[in-house]
Length: 314
Ligand code: NAD
Ligand code: AKB
View 1 (cartoon, helix red, strand yellow):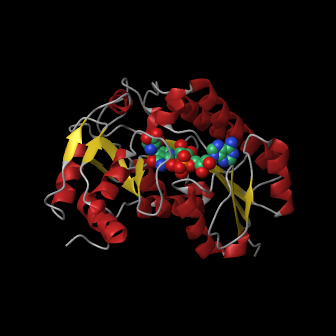
View 2 (cartoon, rainbow, N blue to C red; view 1 turned 90 degrees about the vertical axis):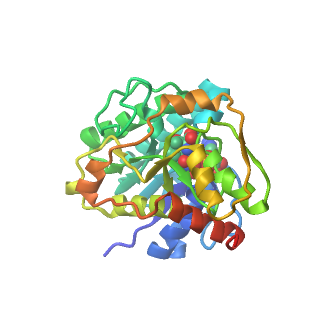
């Protein structure tokens, strides 16, 4: 059987840094090439600096390493994107076009390009948002993800490129820090809790958002990528859900372990972004097609986060 050779683009980010290690334990350290704009440290396998906007450099890395699968994780997220919309659009779209075109021309077997719950806007159902829903996002990030999903679907239908995608909710993990999104507060809050510091939340206490623990997100990614192609009925991007909670609820969950933890609320521009997103997601298509099932709820995640960040608080 052919040995898979995997290129990860944007490998230094919140998800990439964890996914690379998971891929290396499945496929072998030397078979996963981690790349990012910035130098990657503490690597257990090969890594390179690669600007995803540089098509020629990307093609060279693909050929040099005999790559047959690409995970494209480089992107500008929701909050950072709103600070400079045309810059965010350019990076998110141009990097995706490079990945899709090189994958097509180099005969790549499988491509992974994640999307986000940011594809939804105010017109979408606010609870249990269905797989096929009106998509009118209110951030440039969301617009780029809607366009990206459709381009992935186009390359699948037109060229037979096996592109797979899921709409991650906010991802929470102890291994890495988030990179400029609206759900970042739900990672930061744990770091403040283990340091015994009060936390100022940039969202209102009752703002419910869909979230997913990193352990589940990595497993979902690997499961989707390993699923038989003929089982996949969604080639734009699968809805994915883990849990939903508000800042008040995550605070209560942390207080069950650290009763003195203090949180205040000072909503900023990210409140409007959060309010344009659904509070919960219907992921029945993912459950049906590739047996998706999350394992972590809020309290289980809290215990695991506090254990890893602070070795438990009690
Ligand atoms: P991140 O911001 O933490 O990491 C992105 C990485 O891409 C960074 O290391 C950055 O240096 C790199 N990068 C940026 N521009 C680049 C370029 N031109 N060339 C090469 N690398 C470049 O993002 P993340 O949270 O790890 O997200 C990964 C993917 O998952 C993105 O597509 C994101 O939209 C999606 N996603 C993430 C979340 C989440 O909560 N983290 C939720 C939904 C979707
Ligand atoms: C963000 O907040 O921008 C990301 C996402 C949900 O896509 N975490």
